[in-house]
Amino acid sequence: MNIRSMPNGIFNQVMEFMRPAFVQAAALCLRDGPNGREVLLVRTLQRQHWIIPKGWPMKNRTLAQAAEAEAWEEAGVRGQIATTPIGAFNYTKIKKSGLPVQCRPQVFVLEVRETHDKYPEAGKRTRKWVGLPQAAEMVHNPELAALLRSL
Image (cartoon, rainbow, N blue to C red; front, side, top):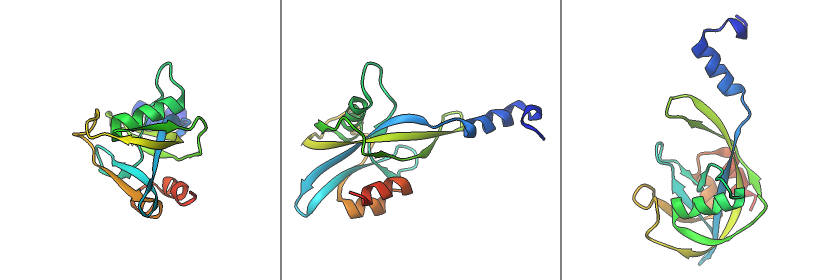
């Protein structure tokens, strides 16, 4: 069967896998803890995996500014965001329709200066400060784990 003769639903699913990854913005929230550098992880809403705050680009904001906004919304932290990403990772997001979408968040370091208990997703997400080696073990995504190990 060639791609032109596929039923419409299968064609749409194949095309979903063939598309380039959607760009996202992610914040690697860091601070100096009692035992060295720590990273702030948050739980994903559906699968409850540990991840760093991330989300879609925002109108009239750079990717770095979008990452900074995601850090506030998902983790309740504020600080100094880097303007250049330190890396990226790939993951598959399952859309509400059930179709998978490939995403590639660009990762920006956020040096955390303030942590708040009241923030937009405080009732939805769990957050946790952990050392970099432990964070690399906790995250489900192997590319993100490798990025954490490289720091």
